[in-house]
Image 1 (cartoon, one colour):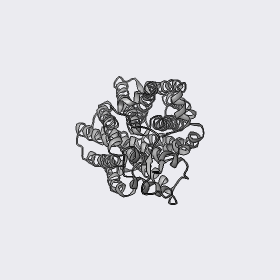
Image 2 (cartoon, one colour):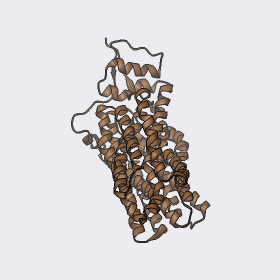
Image 3 (cartoon, one colour):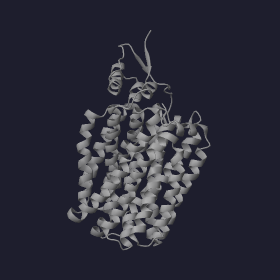
Image 4 (cartoon, one colour):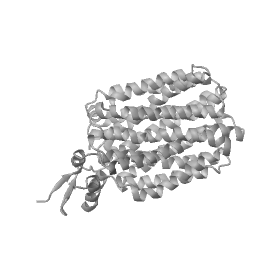
Length: 447
């Protein structure tokens, strides 16, 4: 009789291994670089505006171009991983955004910079969804959401470190140095992924990889495990025929998919509205450029701390314990940002609250989306959720630019920014009433 191993159940019975921690660390390093390259445009914008003598609102196309690239990367490039593998797409994505970030340093006009930001965004968008899917698929059910959340904390960490680094680089070497740093680091990391990043075990099983290859990866998780030559590896799900995206709306997933998209849309609209315009708005309010950039970096750093702090809660109580409270905190922090004047202490506190709430909320939404979809459509499900979110991310900077163009001021900007997290709270409350969503929230990223 041919021995059969259910890979998902086998992983659930194992202790956390060095290989799994390594996958989380390497994926986190990739998302950290993605966070740096996706958001560094906000840090350099005040310096470019001053050097090129353009009004702040003229920078809106450059903000939107990068985010539109992220959108297409999530919708078009990320789903390729369900066919050709997570590892391959991640490697190509990291190399791509490294190259185009490096080229951004030589941009001589807003048109050139916008085009290069679009191409950078394509690479970032393709990598993010697969970092989430790859990490979630390596961990047992009991720790999957927390480990995925910790991994994706690399994105705001990259943004935060990029902000502090930009605050030092720009005065000493000019704004191009930020893009050079953001391009050189990924180009060092990308070749290393060939040797250090394994392919997702679940993807190998679902895609019909050779049993010996699957056994080799499982043996790295538990060296004491032995599999006979005829072992058949399976996973408790069936690959469905038809258009992959269509499966996001089948088997009772339609309303849940729509509500997940609402959460992602509102969350990313806010994150990119604030990260794009906060340095410029604070500089125009009278703060030094370096201080304005540091405030934005502190916002992202607060998000990192919140992601790490909430990770154990995700493992014990599930995603719904975090989502609504996080977005409520974001709404309060954003409303405060528009009403605290130029008191630096209060600005930092409000920025930290908004960053902690929005980024922890988005991080938890990432883990929830990965939990909601089975392996054969997981990268597609997460990629499309991020892609729909990127529509919000494109609209966010445009909203900010419109408010500034009409001279409505900082108060109006942040009053508007406080609305999307409240809408996300409503979507979460409806999700909590859906049985499939409740199951996903309590059993993170079940196979």
